[in-house]
Image (cartoon, rainbow, N blue to C red; front, side, top):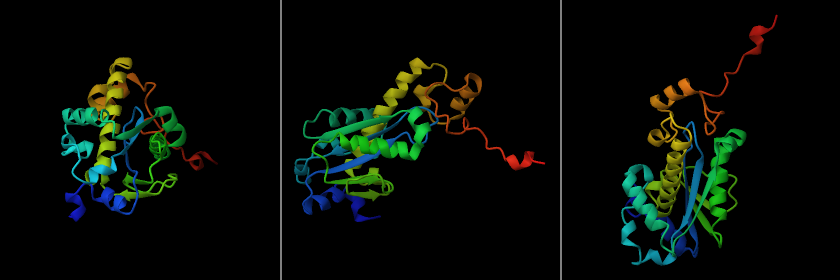
Length: 221
């Protein structure tokens, strides 16, 4: 493994040493589900944390998928309560996902989350692949949410925000099990869709809702 994997501030530190003071991490939650929004978050940790001032409560911060729900909620509380941490969270709903597609919706959420950070970051660390629509200079890091504290923080903020929304949707749209599967295509969710049909937060552009394409040539002649 890369040496960077043992130092989850290494990407930020390299940029700080190059003179960039404002380095943001950005990540999303909810690209794959059949229902609900996609949520992105952006986080800037203070430059001073490159030394010994790092808040020890965040020492085990990691990719949200590698944390328990309790851990995510605890980290969320710390991240959103410390005044020296700046963050933005953006939500793009299912209707918009259907209109512009999930990739564009994800990128929109990322850009909107970053736009909430004032002053704007000088460089952005992005989980996964480069974002063509991102006007800010950025570095894409595969599995970045496990390699960068900034991206991990964004991962937690996005995941917890989305999960809490899905819990609220459970009350608005009972019977689908949103509290359990958070909108992902589990057997339970697919069975509910088969019995109840889609609701207002289902992504109609996703299978199994998207109509099958008909080959018109089969009906000619």
